[in-house]
Length: 134
Image 1 (cartoon, rainbow, N blue to C red):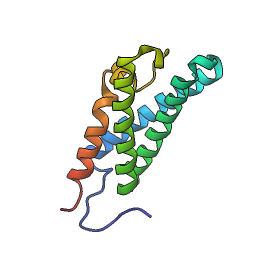
Image 2: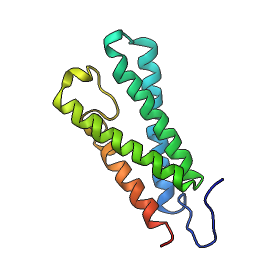
Image 3: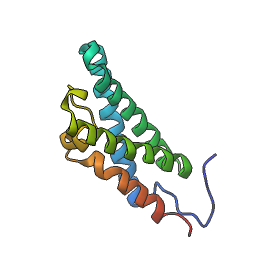
Image 4: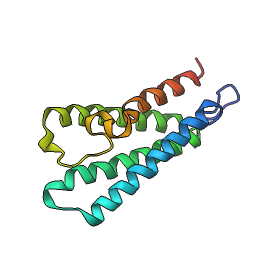
């Protein structure tokens, strides 16, 4: 059940609509990328980045849903997982290029996506905080 209340602003109004749209684009991009990669390019040594792209796609889908439907707790948890993922994968991909022989959404802190994957969770958490009741 969504966290609702008359005093609590909805996460999907105003700037939240833009945020939901950006998350939806990333959900589609990461999911589509992983499906194509898993169907056409999967080899034993490249499975990790493709599976990671699929995981990122799932995270973006859930975050999009949570923000659009005002499920604050789910949004916080999902966006925190996203933040941990992009920071962990970003650091690991810079330290050891062999861990990720092919790029993922979160590789190099999302450099292939103009660093939006690095900035997006901070913006998402900021928006959830800004629209929360103090």
